[in-house]
Amino acid sequence: MKQFTLILSFCLINFFSGFAICSGDSRSFTEILFQNKDFTIFKCKIQGYAKGWYTAQVLETFMGKIDGNIVKLNAKLGKFAGIYKTGDEVLVYSSDGAGTEFNLNGTCDDLTKIITPNEQTQHELKLLAEFADIFKNKKSGEFKFYYANKVLAAEGNYKSGKPAGTWKHYYANTQLKTEQDFENNVTKYYAENGFISSYTKVTKDSTLNLIYSNKTNGNVSYKFVDIPNDSGFVSVNYEFYENKNIKLIQSLAYLVKGTNTSFSGTVGKYSEFWDNGKVKVQGNYSKSKRVGIWKYFDKTGKLISEFDNKDGDTKK
Image 1 (spheres, helix red, strand yellow):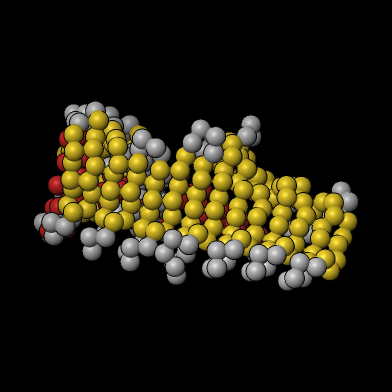
Image 2: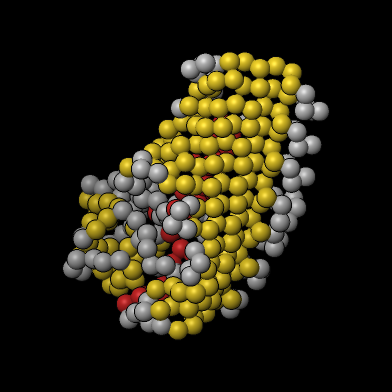
């Protein structure tokens, strides 16, 4: 159980951090673009290819910054090696690169493509141009963006080129997908069937993440309260039964160095519960070792055993 919760917690760190994970990204196109971060996006014409590198002329830059109008595109060890011909016009999404050199094999290589006259690609270019105009000219006001079939994809306000107020993104079936309140730092995600799937609220003292059941709308399956400290943060994890009773409480410590986050151990009080609400297991952890007296109870709440781990055993 603890291992599963740890894996889920690591996934949530990436999910709520805003990092671009395009190949496994559940965000819609407007969600990826509307905050103007994560990528350099540009249109270019291939001039040549040698030893894993393309040389290309930049035709238009939508997001990010490029020095000059000639760039080198690193295609080594990836699916883009040698596939483009001289004269091909390519729409590049790069999350790794700067100046005049950009990597085609980064986290967002699945978005890079040859520009064709098909409706979907042309609509993509139209959306990119709309966002680029807002960011470059630091526009303010209410904006709406649409899918190629003219169904509403997103709506919200910009203030001097930055998202403000509440932004809403929609699935292609018109169902609300994401609602992000920039004033209160609250984001809600919804499944295509209308069920709420997650909720996050960021304050100066903590970050609250809720993951909801996909069986019963509004039932919380997991709650994570991340509390920062001098070395990183402690995530207090709660797991719930489908009947809403609490199943597990534990605290996981993480180290943060720059952009890297690593797990440093289970700490503090640990509790498991039966589905009827009675305590099942109770004890304490220090750096993922059980310490002190651990108690075990049956479903009626009767103590059935206890064990003194003293300064800590090696059990996980």
